[in-house]
Image 1 (cartoon, rainbow, N blue to C red):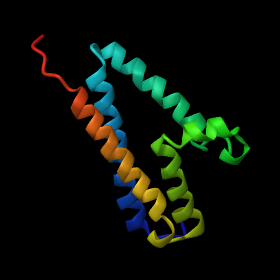
Image 2: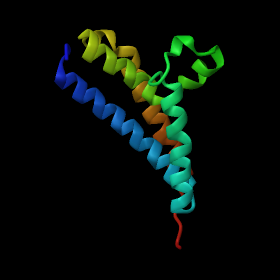
Image 3: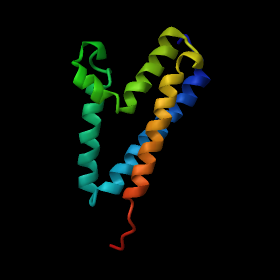
Length: 120
């Protein structure tokens, strides 16, 4: 561990909040618990494959890299590698931090718009 553990914790919380927004969106779209679990798996599996966790993003075709740009895990992996392996500070990670904040706000906005009160 070369970087600042407090910075990693703060930016990790930002990623967790973004992941919670994905969960809110899934729960606002789905009608049943089974449907919510299937949607979560439908999002989780491509996230791991397209984010650069399994395979380097540079080796992926341009279309796949473009799709991976909409996955929050892509930016969090860059933050993790930067802090843990390289020991960089926030000054080098601003782009990823701002994209994670933007994705979280967009997901929050969409899930609020999709939310409807139901009496079941």
